[in-house]
Length: 459
Image (cartoon, rainbow, N blue to C red; front, top):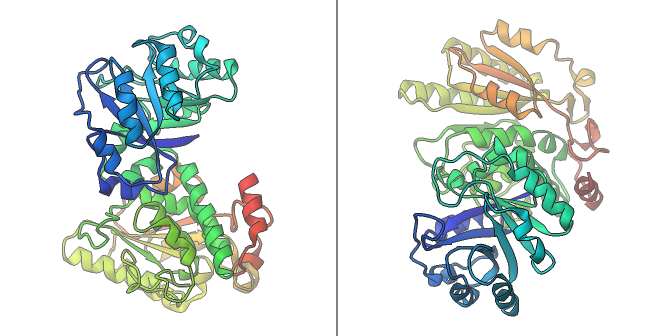
């Protein structure tokens, strides 16, 4: 199942497209004349034509005479036309769309029985099932939508099924049988579009991050896959919860993210690109001469990076200094710091731990990647860590131990109310997603090959 971002034809603009382009297959464009809704768009296909994008333009005609709109939107670059069976001559409209080289999608309103579209299922390419009544505000998702999806699928297994209306992170589970979900008002109520999209399906976003990591490292032929793959779920939740503006990385209202174990920067870069800080294409420049994506993060190279990291153990002290500075300024924003379990071997890290405790840095949240491996072996072999929960508590920190692949646990921990600095010990599986890499210390800093990507894609 994939997500299609949705906008009115009069709302299309370059800033929205720049965030969506390359990250999704399609954009769903609503055109309304008041037939089904109280809203009327200005019906200007030129707005659509002016947008230069690789996204497939999927136009939804909520209009009385769809046949008069088909040619103008064909010229504007539409590839798919959705129209309602309740208006016009269905056979003629289908023929007109197909004769103009576009795909046909019939729209099924909540009150329209499946029997109405059944005679046309062999002629069309897609069905758009409305999860709410078009254009009426304040509606709840209609539960019968999921039954319609399964019935349509039985009638024609290969047809593309989309659902529009009432989609959020709670109702998404009810439409698992469809191919696409359309998200409009829920998506665009937040100015950070990609964050809203990630909320809808965090598992899908984590998978995209892992896939990006593998492609980056394969292209670079070097790097650190184990920790990067293992921390994908944590980074999805971080970027869903933190305050930031990808189009204005220096925004004063932002939270701060410090990556102390800088060698897992592929997952940081992957998250930044997938959440809109820069182009996904740039990820493939990792570790190349002149690239902004260096093997360890370099603050001056890439807007959005808060620190240059490399020497293990230093990041927590840097984050603690930032947190103290924000408290002095009475700034309520948080500082998030990612560290590794192997990094606990470093003495300077514990200086930062004591510093944070002394100054009661309740705006400092530290997340430990507790995967049990490091460069030359397991943490038990290299330097036994003991009971880290008790150690941090004895140093005056609050501690939460969680499953680093459980989004609910990660989110609750990130939002835990505390008057002390917080250490989240996230138990993760190194190399997660590629079975032969999981929990193997040998993959700490060994670049994967195309075989790893094939295994990942097939799992």
